[in-house]
Image 1 (cartoon, one colour):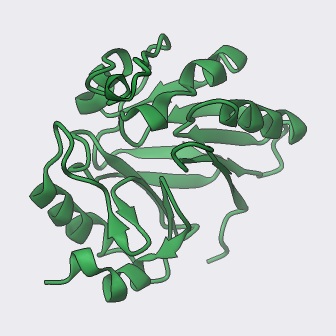
Image 2 (tube, one colour; image 1 turned 30 degrees about the vertical axis):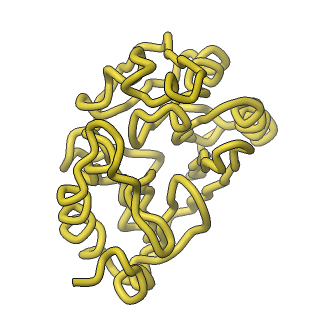
Amino acid sequence: MKKPRLHIETFVERTFGENALVISTSNGDQPPGAWVVDPSFPPQPDAVLDHLRRHDMRLERIIITHGHGDHIAGIDRIAEACPDAVLHIAAEDRHMLTDAQANLSAPFGVSLTIRTPAGGTLEPGATLTLGRTEWQVLDTSGHSPGGRSLYCAQAGVVVVGDALFAGSIGRTDFPGSDHRRLIDNIRRNLLTLPPETVVYSGHGPTTTIGNERKFNPFLSE
């Protein structure tokens, strides 16, 4: 089966090293559809918007893998420039958009809140479409109560936020975190994916499911 024409561009935020993604696909439609995943602090959102403009992309969704401050800080900037884009976040993390304590920005002296309302949720087992690609919503909660990943079998890609990193996993010492839940969800919903699946994490480099099965010390029995 021929893989769809999918492109993922990563934009790294300077302070926390957070990865925002622009996922786009072209099926001959003009302009091509796109998602922005986890926009963070300035100047990252402006770099994302510049990329969308230069490639004449039509932003359809803003996808939030979880509600921590470094993954939501750029939502309003993106939404103001692209008002037709729908914001998606899990119901369990939705309150973090407007609660600086819950999104962990207040302890860092930022007190970040988001004005843009969420227009869509991310229910485990649901499917989102981008062009001709289909993305399954996976439950990878544990780092946060509503952590989600998105898996595209056609492209062999999974976007995991802070659930899984190259050689590591998300922190579970935050309010609302649950270490056992995160480990169980990673094993059940991520490590069962094909080994060649490319993993896009919220921080750090890409990896593969096969590499994390073999070498991730946090996932050994």
